[in-house]
Image (cartoon, rainbow, N blue to C red):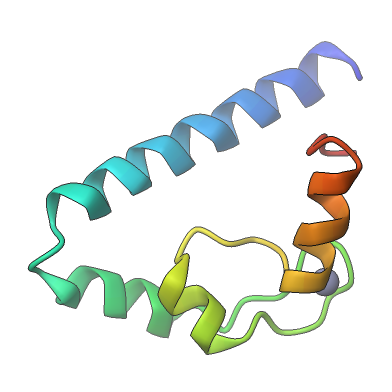
Length: 80
Ligand SMILES: [Zn+2]
């Protein structure tokens, strides 16, 4: 992992943390969360399949489908 990968990983972690914090503060306000979920016709960064809407609703910051997320976590949660 070179310094750019590290920077990218940190950047992603920071964004996810900020997003989670924001969502935690705005539990009553589902609008933002729904908007994020709606905006997310997102694709899994590992396999390229669409991330299911239900998953994005639970975790709007998800960048992987459940299967790839599991695999990724089992492998130590390190971005390649
Ligand atoms: Zn996937």
